[in-house]
Length: 99
Image 1 (cartoon, rainbow, N blue to C red):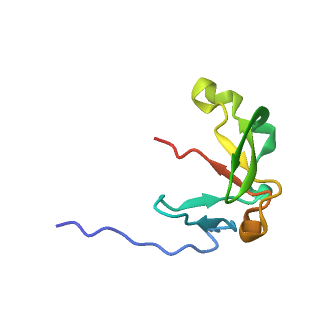
Image 2 (tube, rainbow, N blue to C red; image 1 turned 90 degrees about the vertical axis):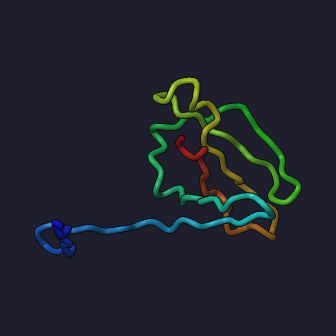
């Protein structure tokens, strides 16, 4: 049986993980990740006119990913001014999970 090689990151092969995502858990829904704006390339997004309202979080705005075609319309959303109970997600972004 061949044993798999395990390597540690180092100067010759650095690995860094730099993200401050938040996990939001809501009622019976699966946990979701909200990503900080600084970790998003906004040149790949286009603000759409779609908006929704959640009585727990507030008004939600949406972005599309033009390069993704029809399946990426309104694929990213953000609560720019959420209710105080969920203020930690203010301005962070959430996207539809990939299939």
